[in-house]
Amino acid sequence: MSPPDVSIILPVRNAERYLSQCLDSVDRQTLKSWELVAVNDGSIDQSLEILHHYAKCDPRVLLLNNPGKGLASALNYGIQHANAKMIARMDADDLMHPERLEIQFTYLEQNPEVDLVSSRVAHFPKAHKKLRKGYEVYVDWTNTIITAEEHLMNRFVDSPFAHPSVTFRKSIVEKFGGYREGNFPEDFELWLRWMGAGVMMEKIPRVLLEWRDHPQRASRTDSRYHQLAFQKIKAQYVNLWLKNEADLNGRRIYGWGAGRVARKFAGHLTREGIKLSGLIDLDLQKIGKRMNGLPVLSIKSLPPAKECFILILLGARGKREEISEYLTMKGFIPGRDFLPLA
Image 1 (cartoon, rainbow, N blue to C red):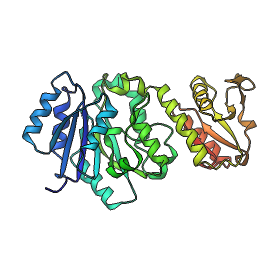
Image 2 (spheres, one colour):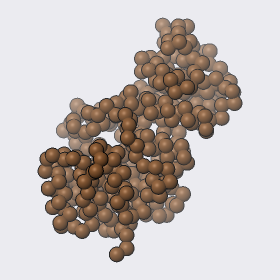
Image 3 (cartoon, rainbow, N blue to C red):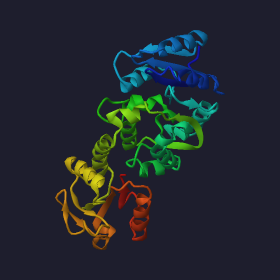
């Protein structure tokens, strides 16, 4: 038999509540040449029984037990056993739109320079309205990032993709490595590492995944997905970017933001070896003081672009855009003279 067009990697841990809905959405795909590599990661509920039932009914379902522990090892184990050249990620509590695999597979086939393609996602259900606000803001943001250039420009702001919405070539795992274990979000670290290696990533401007929110999702309960973990992994890859890709030419580096969150971020950057010359802020009560050992300057003291490089450390809604617009008006070029990190 010829290999399938796409291998879907589905890690499963205690997902009995939503798993059948997820598997049904896979079964409804218009692209029929797929295999589902389901990796049971120590489930103690009925998840394994559900997977066995689907595997008996459909020979395209390959059921594995994770020999390690945790999401990263389950994903890597699944990819090792994948028979297709294209890898589609999926989570056990989400839903694929029927055309998801066909559209993403066709896109990668027709665009050989692109190694990873995602899609816009829809955030649901409305029943969890109290939980939704933060994720709604994130989904609204990531759904606006489409082109490879936009992904590169925004790569340090947050993970530019909903993890289960991506499809990528297996060859880039073989070339640049797969998921890593650590106290950081495994998908975000992977995207940063691959983009730093030159992997081109794009997004189809169409919703192809229903991304479920609920109180038990790992991004709400696991410390690897908290703000501190994101700041630390960002700082590591920002340092690599400044060393390997940025054209500083001796320019001084400033952080924009002197509030509590920005100061913590500046501390992580400093510990990674990034030498900041100061912090830019609008708060008159902070200007003129030293915070984290750095002078806080007003925007009136901001040197011209030829003399400095700005790292935007403010992530409050709308602030990043306001600062970017101001810097652009002053002649700073995005990616060359400033970069958003929050």
